[in-house]
Amino acid sequence: MESYRKKACVSEDISKQRVTLVDDRRSLDQAVKILLRYFIIGLDAKVKRKRSIKYVSHIIFATSNELIVVDVRAIGRMPHFHYSDWSALGSLLGDSMITKIGFNMQQKQQLIKDVLCGVFLNGVVDLREAFRAIELTNPSLSAPRGAPCEGLRALRKICYNLLDKQMPDDSCEIPELGPLSVVAKHAVVMEAFIVFHAYIELDRRVRPQNLSALIQELLREPSPGQFLTLSVPWSSVHFVDTVDSYLDAVEYLNECSILGFDSEWKPNKGPIRMALLQVASEDKVFLFDVMALHKILTFGDWTLLKSIFTDPNKLKLGFDTRDDSKLLEDFMGPLSMSSVTDMGVVMRAMEKLRPECMYQRDGYVFPVVRGLSRLCNILLGRPLNKSKKLSMTNWEKRPLARSSLEYAALDAHCLVLCWKELIQRLGPTAEDLIEISVIAYNVETEALKSVL
Image 1: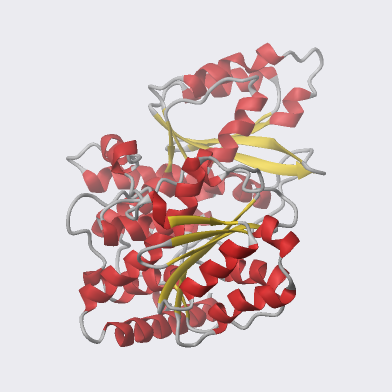
Image 2 (image 1 turned 135 degrees about the horizontal axis):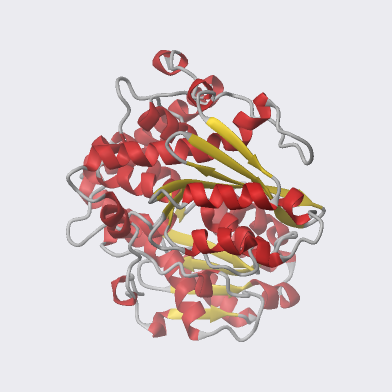
């Protein structure tokens, strides 16, 4: 951490840039003319919230020596303002020949599109995703000069590694009205400045390769034929929604020593409740219809399933299990789960401390996949299909489509397969090695949290 503390602040570089505030037609037209001179520009949007509505207050552009801040609300309040006043800026942002470098751009693009009356942004590179992909596939390109700093994330890490600078600890509020103060200018333009200059540095490092082509390849999504599919026959997937099927499932699961589990719920912004509980062995998968069972099972019936989760002799495998354990308590009552291994923590610990075990024997690890999908890609050779169409299913709807049921079954079953593959790679002392790695990773993570 010592080397991190000694880095110069990026604000010193920002202070050397010319910052232009755009708040009327004339300055907007001049700004567009300036930006059209460049093939690469930094782009950011400051998003604010009023009640439940999000909107863009400022759009920021960065070039090699200039920072342009477009005050969206001031322009919108101009006398005789018309949406056609945005047309020149819309043409600039829609031009695919001009590369726009942003950070965490998914929501920002949509909100900018709303400002510009539906103009679609082309040529946008999300540096957050690009940097992560490069870090995973070619760490030397994204490494800092000198000693690395563990624990930094996202934009701070990009600033540290690529610009050799430190971001200030505190950010400033963005003023709604009036001219920007010197301090506020730095807060408003900082992200655009960092991503633009970081991209230029990355471009320098990858030469003679083409950075744009490299990023496009790294951010390539898997095709439908490259996803992992359910390896047990469909006859081994059981939908549990009656008392008899529930008792049969619990009887079978009581004979198993290793189980994978997951849960699904209706995606919404309010409180969540479990709609489906998936529990898998190596040979079978049970999909418990929690909504139907809740109406017909007694509290005593639920204790039969609860005893499986509290049994210290059965290994339960989940992935980022905090939500699952909370939701189980909603219908099982207080639950002290025993012998639960969070494969999310295992993956992060092994990648950090034993990377030699986390490799793909055949095929390709897609840098864009994350979470459980990435674990499957590494250990089983193929990622999971986590498309919004499947992951954002209304899990309270009945009947569920076959594709949704397969998705749910695979989420639990793949955990058992990943565990067995990892045990095989690590050899006879595998479980001890995993336990030690997880403990060391958790201790290091907590230590970093206390320092940063």
